[in-house]
Length: 189
Image 1 (cartoon, rainbow, N blue to C red):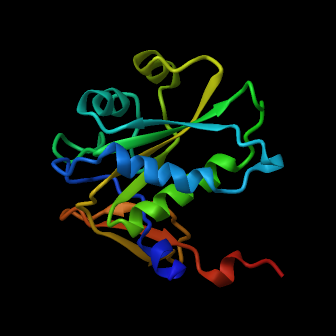
Image 2 (cartoon, rainbow, N blue to C red; image 1 turned 120 degrees about the horizontal axis):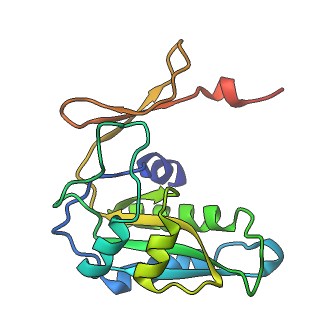
């Protein structure tokens, strides 16, 4: 059921790094993205797939993790993603990618959850460093990085409290809490 997939689709940031992703798994997830709607049916998105440890390390080094967790530099060795899908916009096809990359990223993550995996959309990217390290052409705009792997953390959804604080946080035992606004707070009538 889609409701269950969406509830399981959290921003996981800690993974069992021993669980190696295969190219075929990443291709299956990009196939879901390929089938998504696209503004004007232009289909300007391209995808860089990484499952090899050396490329994974290069990508990891160019990402920032969990802005609200100021005392955490991201997953430790052994807890890093088993693979990545970098969503790129081909500027030879379009200069504006609208929300296409959000639609495809969500579809990739829902497909990952269905496979027993998890992931995290990352927009805090050292664009130039990543471009140089992976030799990504200048005609490709780096839009999002989707980190993927076998999650080893528990993510709990909480209601936003009376103080309105929406910042996610972690317990000392690493249980990750994500406050969500109530449905009644987000409906405008």
